[in-house]
Image 1 (cartoon, rainbow, N blue to C red):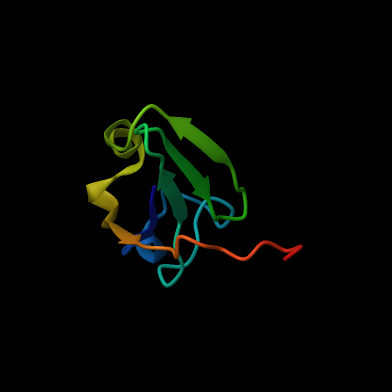
Image 2: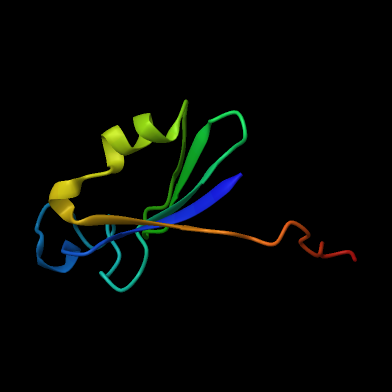
Length: 87
């Protein structure tokens, strides 16, 4: 499983999205995960949050990658063992 977050470096100056559809440039716009079978899930972190499921990362980025918005994807790792709330 791979996790990532996406920032859009020029969103503060764009009028294509209102304050409910974007975060400030200093905050990630969405985060996601790519499962071992290739399925990609995006979770929008904006005020009008939503979750979408895509067959793969390439398809998701074909819709939401937006190089014209300066999209920057940062992959990160998470420890294999995560403490559960009841542990």
